[in-house]
View 1 (cartoon, rainbow, N blue to C red):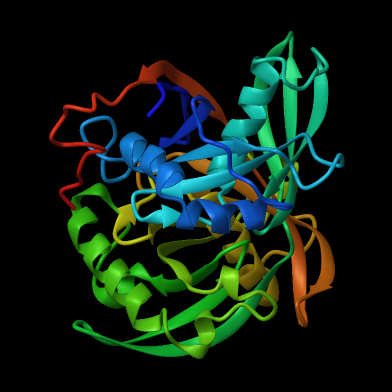
View 2: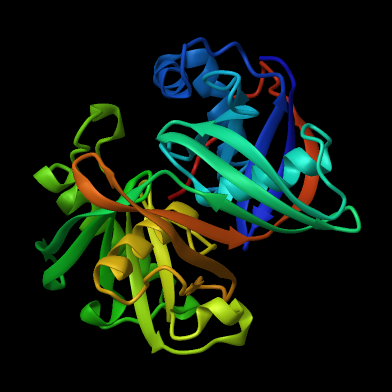
Length: 345
């Protein structure tokens, strides 16, 4: 295996490892096609395993392979990955890529004002609006593909009893359950229990009709469970004037097979916005203040009401910030008995 170069970022506390060199060719006419190839290629997946597994990564590592976009209408493409495989969408990664593209000069940005970066991801085409002041990135807001509600009040049988979940799509399918319904709050001291019940809910729903994408089976599956605390509605100066009366919620996303998102989850925030909009709590003009388990925040809003995949849907914008944490070159000694590594969870 060739040496692999990476630049590491975090978005609201969640890691995002950007692979900048050493990746084998990943053919395909679209990013979604390239994802299918990567899932089946031992050579490509060995790079994912080496970067996400211990001792170079950890059970909650996350990252992306840079690939060509679907066409000239986008600036870049990306395949998102985690310890168990490849995601269809990733909002925190999109925010990190927007910041990275501007800071590296891949996309020429205005020193003061907004620059749009168009990114092709497996679930479709998204855009990151990077806001700079004095040549420094201040904020990144991504506009997602349309998000919509799939089902309400779905019964889930768990070891904690029968629960009720709402299913919503924001580039991936998520199950939403109030943390209080399982006797928890979204707090670091409850991490182990939140992971346990989140995994249980995901797998209980993953083979049901609610986990099927209406038009492309490659997007099937409940990607994660989002457990949340509803902190009510009201003015919040951190969200600006448009946030007056908007919801304030805290969440944790348990995705893949037991990974815990340190950020408020970008695509999950889009899926949450769809539910709140349907409830009438988040009309155009209001902002969701969405907190993570570590206290970081995304701000989310509806920009447009549309139809998508046979559903009433909303186009969402989710704003946050990403910071570079390091750069590295990783190698694999062919004599190393641990190979591409291991995970303990």
